Image 1 (cartoon, helix red, strand yellow):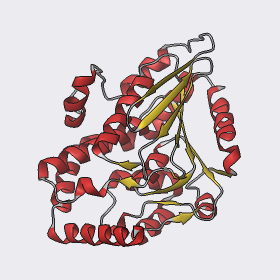
Image 2 (cartoon, rainbow, N blue to C red):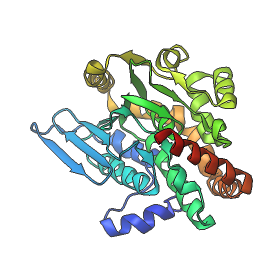
Image 3 (spheres, one colour):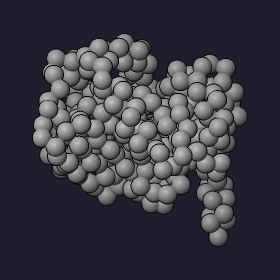
Amino acid sequence: MAAVAVMVARRVARSGILFPYSSPQLWGRAALQPPVLLPTQRRTFSNNKILVELDTSSGVATMKFKSPPVNSLSLDFLTEFCISLEKLENDRACRALIITSAIPRIFSSGLDIMEMFGKSTEHYAEFWRAVQEMWLRLYGSSMVTVAAINGSSPAGGCLIALSCDYRIMVENPKYVIGLNEAQLGIVAPFWFKDTFVNTVGHRVAERSLQLGLLHPVTEAHQIGLVDEVVPEEKLQEKAAAVVAQWLALPDHARQLTKSMMRKAVLDHMLAHREEDIQNFVKFISKDSIQKSLSMYMEMLKKKKS
């Protein structure tokens, strides 16, 4: 359909995988199909940046980000993410997804700044369409989705977590989470904002977005940005328990309720998708924004050295 990303069309064609935009259509499909019970079996598939393991006996898949040093959301990462998610959506044995990181102390650092600096307008458009596609597929997924956040999760990393049904974060005073785009001189787009508001409420979201706040774990829990906080050794156990609780309900009732709750936000983004891409390209191409990104990258280099 028209909403399929140019990025996906170019890159996925070579993989032999064809997938439609998932949210409304797949929910109807999934609601009509009873869960399939298969013998105990684990299936694993991996690419350069993401590892997925599916337990077909429980119907639960675990997706681990493995793109060092900080799981930044590059164009390649986003492409692999969409392909992996679509494989799971199309697998009748899969009913739930736990998303976590294989990199210590980081869930995802968010959008790869190098994709937004010193590139052509065509590249910026392709990259932003890929970011949109990631959100559309995850926020619109028919599966139960749980973010098992085992490290800091700023900006786009926070968006991934927000797009899931449930968020569990490791208790660590060094970890933070939030949409901190304002600190980089970037405005979080309306669909970032809408997802955030639907999670924490308007007033908390307004203050957090304007100040570009990165919330410590305890504070993130207090404002409702994360649902639970656990010790690191309990994270996977808790994620599995949450998934089991959600899967105990009839799939069709849960899926249709999720569709009802999220449809307006998804539809709003789809209706303004091309305009959003144009706005991003125009904004990120400004000399002042390119200068801000350059200064930020220099600051990161100094920290590393």
